[in-house]
Image (cartoon, rainbow, N blue to C red; front, side):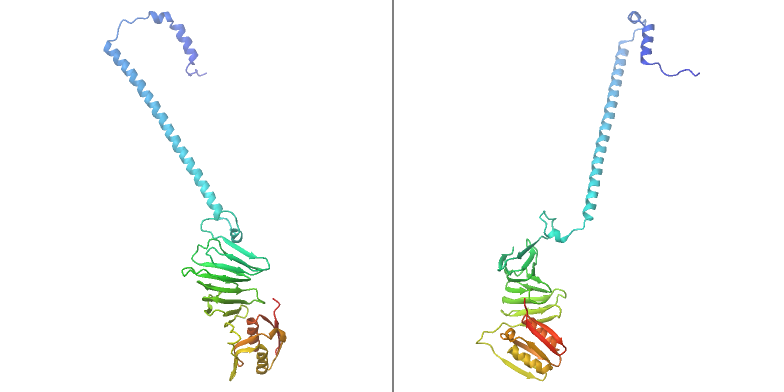
Length: 340
């Protein structure tokens, strides 16, 4: 068996010292060789220096541990912040925003996001509303507008469904535009009325004061520039028919004229009943209409019977006068006043 090389435990050492070196022996011990005073002082100084060095080493070790702990704590904080930022960025980037819900949200918007307001008239009489730029809108029944809440953008934009009259606050640096279905009407300082609620898919724009430019929203092509108060643009998106009607003259100023130049018929303020007779004869067709529906309607324009189809001419007349065209056969048509 191998001898046990473990050092004796502290209690064993104490017993060993007490058995072999009693207090009496320690007290009676004497040395025949005394150290010189200088040597004794030198040894005491060496002992003190050793104690001081040992204390400094313990202090430096403790300071190093504290520094490492601080660095580790800072690293953990930065690591946690980095993970939080990464997760938050991924959550924001992965969202699928809903423009419709964002436009009607009541929470505080993200910086730069546009907030839309909608004003509807569900009553039976017109309603006036002042926009943020001090322009005034008269909204007709069963109609509504949508616009930017602050109007802080360079362009003042309004979206219209139905009928409304606009009295625009003049600002040459910020054009005022109204989108109404297939048309965009732009003005600087003026008043006009837009109606998208007419029978069928027809839109009318009537100028009251100032000047307006009307364009197609799909092609961005200008359809008309109107500067005469009272003039009205009629547009039918399905057939792309555009017609600008001049302001109706007063009864004492109305001039009636009818001319024929070859295949072209030139008409000015001709009663619609008379126009129907001319078209029946020129195209060899039959046009039926209720006299009570057309008794107060006149027509101004020109028709080229060699180039213009009869149905196109009748469709144009119906668009202008808010009437409905029904083609019975290739040579027979009915026109009547729209119910809307």
